Length: 222
Ligand SMILES: CC(C)(COP(=O)(O)OP(=O)(O)OC[C@H]1O[C@@H](n2cnc3c(N)ncnc32)[C@H](O)[C@@H]1OP(=O)(O)O)[C@@H](O)C(=O)NCCC(=O)NCCS
Picture 1 (cartoon, rainbow, N blue to C red):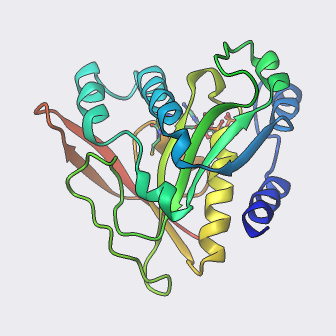
Picture 2: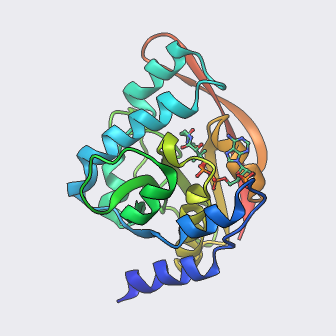
């Protein structure tokens, strides 16, 4: 099946070991992590994952008020991505969970990260974001959007974000896009910068609680 193929190919191409203090552990864990397309039934688990990811991993980059405000509209599930078949979840086998000593409330495969790409104009925002632009992009002229990456704090810096990013870029390229762009959080910019994205301009996103969220518009050629 085509979807399975795209994910297998993405995993085969993933450069498993990067500069990590425990490269062998990282490699062992990654062999027990699998990517698949997200389904509507995943939404309750994704909501919890996104909440934990933002609260756990953005504390060095944003204030508590920015985080609370952004969780209302900017960070959250974008069900359009799931409906489009362009949103990916990373699942860990119990063997990988044992290696991280993470707590699992899920009996078998555990969702540890999510992220994806889009063929639509919206650059960021959850289902509750009012500035959505669902119009389709033109792959010949527009950059595919890289969207909504969230890794559980127990799984950060283990290459999961990189795996999902590679699969997203591969899928967007297969759909005819030759450029990617993203509205990166200050946290996400560290991943995207390491993967060849360059900053184009700063963006300040107004939040419902009166705060604003600085993010960075970043781009990369396929
Ligand atoms: C940004 C995020 C998705 C990264 O996911 P991740 O799985 O931890 O990233 P990876 O392990 O694949 O990191 C790959 C490389 O990116 C860079 N990187 C990622 N996170 C970093 C950090 N916090 N500090 C410095 N470099 C970082 C490193 O070069 C890293 O390689 P290394 O670990 O071998 O040094 C994750 O931190 C997250 O979910 N953050 C909270 C939500 C968020 O802000 N999402 C981004 C939306 S745009």
